[in-house]
Amino acid sequence: MHKRFTDIKLIELKMGHHQLDSLDEQILKLIATNARIPFLEVARACNVSGAAIHQRIQKLTNLGILKGSEFVIDPEKIGYETCAYIGIYLKDPESFDNVIKALEAIPEVVECHFTTGKYDMFIKIYAKNNHHLLSVIHDKLQPLGLARTETLISFNEAIKRQMPIMVDTINEE
Image (cartoon, rainbow, N blue to C red; front, side, top):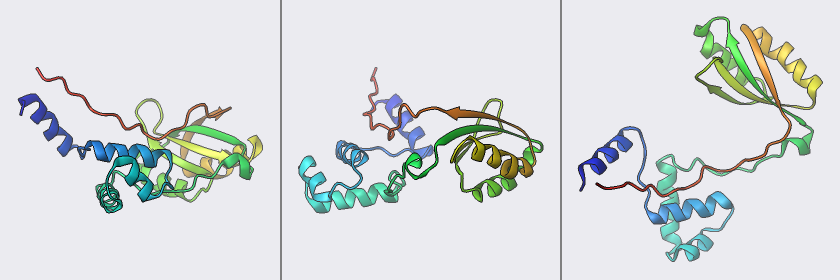
């Protein structure tokens, strides 16, 4: 085996990456497109047995590559017409853990990320309308000990997709 290839594999293992073979990739592509696809249909598409698919799905789940399946609710269809991203500046950076716990208790907050750049954290919120958004910011976020926030309202989600399954190619020298 090529030394550079071995080094990359070692780095991937240390970083928690898992090597996927072509069957794993085929399975992931099929179920990412349709999480409700029957295992037997996946087996037929991959030319293997249903038991083999079941075992692979279990392996991918145990490795943490698959994190389950879910139904996705369209926020607009249930009355949440405003999607906003809010950059949060904390007064005290040591209050991260307390702020995270408080954010978890706010149902309108659907994502929270620690980021590089000017914000201490970045959150995604759904609100019924702009008035509701303002209420969430003033009544639920500001009391958390924030220095300030910057809000960006999303007009439309142009792209939303699963992480693509791409085959890694390594040029051997």
